[in-house]
Length: 487
Image (cartoon, rainbow, N blue to C red; front, side, top):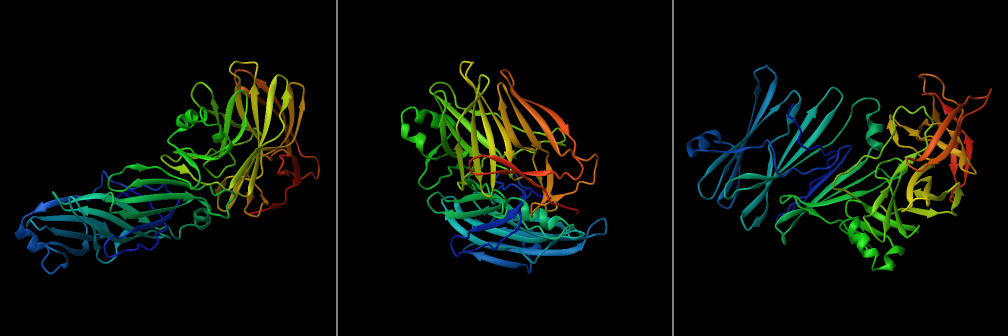
C-alpha cells in the first residue's frame, strides 16, 4: 500500500465555490498536518506528440488556454494483483506539456472515479488549481475513504505547491468504534485569502464533549507558504511567549488579575502571588487531570513548576499528557482556585483545586522558603477522573482520600488506581495479584528532590470494598465504595 503522508480522519464535505474553494476535513486520532514541502506527486515534462497519444479521448477540463486531461487504466500488476494507473496531463498556455502519474494497488486502495479540478484564484505568479483525488482503502474489516487535496501552480512550471490528505476511519475490531469516539477529534478548515494569495488554515483539536475534559487546542498557518499564524481569544491579551508575558507583568499590574493567552502555551489564569512571584495556571493538554503552573519573578526567566503525582506502587507506567507541537490550547471552560496555605515543617503548602470540565483535581504546591530563591514543587494529591485506556474503559489514577498533616510529614490514605467503564463502575482486572484495598503513604519533603512519598500496602479486610475518591468544590476529600462489573 502507498505510504500515507498525512492522516486526517473523518472527512466532511468539501465546500467548493466558483472562485475560491475551501477545504474542510474533520478526523480523529492523528495530529493534523499539511504538507507543503515533500510529496511523492511528481510532475514531469513530456513532448506534445506523447501527450496527444497518452491523453487521446481522455476527459478534459479547460481553464482559458490551460487544460487538464485525466485518464485511468485498470489492470494487473507484476504480482497479478489488480492495479489502477491514474494519469493527469497538463497543457499550459505557453504550449508546454506535463504528466502526473500515480499507481493504486486496487487490492488495498481503490480509486474512485476520476479527480476533480477547480480554479482556486489568480495569484501574481499565475493561476492556482485545487485537484481532489478520491479513493478508498479496503481492509479485512474496514473501508477507509481518502481525499487528497493538491494545490497546483503552473508557472514557471507545474508543481504541487501544497498537499493535504484526509481519511475517514470506519469499521475495524470490536473496540474500534469506542476507541475512535473517545479519542481526540480534529478539524481542518482552510479558506482562500485574496489579501495574501494563500490559504489561511486553522486546525482545531479537542476531546468529545462527553469526555471529562475537552481541552480544545488550535494551530493557525498558511497552507502554501507554511507560515505559522498567531492564535487569538476574544477579549484576552495575547503574548508570543512566556518571556514576553513576564516583561509585561513588570510594568502592568492589571495583567495579574486577568486571563491571557500565550502562543504554544495556551490560556493562563492568574491564581496567586507567592514570595514575589506571580503564579499562572492552566490544565494539561491530554485527557488526564493535570495542572500546569508557571511562576514569574521580578528577575530571571519564567519557569514551569514541576508536576508530580500520587502513586500506589502498582502502576504499570505513568500516564502523561501528549505534547502537541505548534498547538495552542484555547479552552477556557475551567476554573482554578487556591485554599488557605498551611505548614508541613518548614514547608509552606498551598492547596489548589482545578475544576476542569466534568472533573476535579486537588494539587499541593510546596514552597520551601528556607532556600533563596524559594523552591517550588507541585503534587497531584487526588483526581476524580482518569484518562481513556481502551475499549470503553478508563484508568483512574491513585488518589488520596484522607490527608492529615503531622509536624514535618503528611499521612495519606491512598485509593489505588482502578480501571472503570464510562458509567464509573470498576472493571475487574483478571490479571496478576489482587490490588490492596488501600495504600498508606508518608509524604515528606526533601530540599533537593522535593516531595518524597513512602508506601505501605493495606490488604482488604473480609467483605471490604475498594473505594473511589470524591473531591468537593473546596478541595475536601472523601470516598465512596466502588461498584464492580465484570467485562
